[in-house]
Image 1 (cartoon, rainbow, N blue to C red):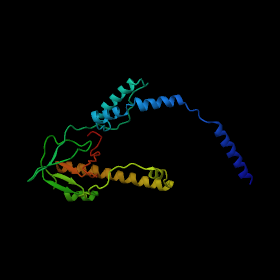
Image 2: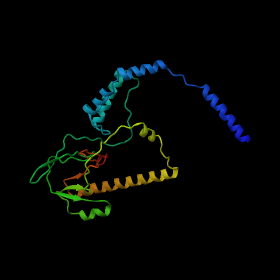
Image 3: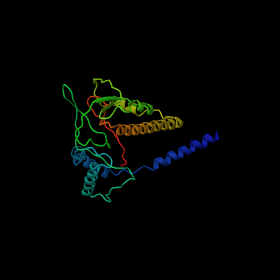
Image 4: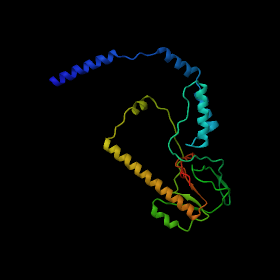
Length: 247
């Protein structure tokens, strides 16, 4: 009883102290912020310039440099202090492309909607070759393609079933769904650590295999490779396909 009584007194005292230390709200500053947001906002102008004029900004790419320069200029225009870039250690080279065109040739020519993967080399002009499907899920799968890929264009991975969309890709939350987002189960520490270690290991294994496979394709003299997007409805999801390190 004594321990509980002391605890109750301590909590009561703590609650009283917290009640006495209320933060002073600067209502004038709040009003000024609201005025800026509702009457002089530049959010859409900024968003439009970065996305439509400069476009995608791959890390360390020329487009990223242009975006940084434009942003510095805006910050200086807005009279902010100490505007400067901060570099990070040894990310590697940048990358960008100027044009890409892919067509399926045959009795009927069909243009394909495609984009090059970041950090992959160009073809130095148009190339044409027979299409060959290649499935490599583990290092042992490489050998069955040795000597068979020279002059070929490779279609990587398994065919993915196309499902026509019947529901919108996005939706607005209502009060009930928003309330549900506030509740989640915290993973146990050891479980979270083990799961993270598993994901990191799987990622490293995929990266190591991809590097080995890319080197094999170059060694075998393949002309190019094509991967299917993991998204539906004509949306192309593109990531890196080569090394950021030169050489």
